[in-house]
Image (spheres, rainbow, N blue to C red):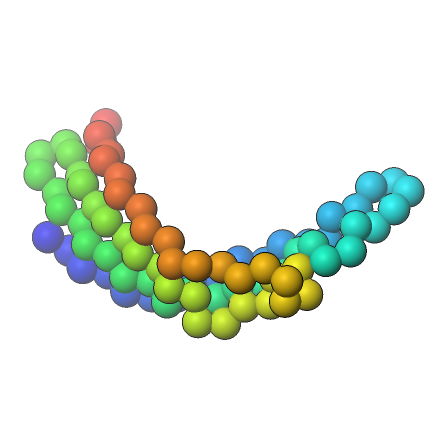
Length: 76
């Protein structure tokens, strides 16, 4: 088993077309992340959790929440 910890950063630009710019889109978010990976033979099973630390999404109109992910990997 291998634990991991770190930070995760997202940056999204403002949505725009050739004619108009859509207001209250885009922004940034910073997450604290942690997880656990388990390896055996050619397989891996993992879990990752992210909690928002700082964010400014859509000019403050949108709030990111916690995120979790489970994954299974076959190595070849």
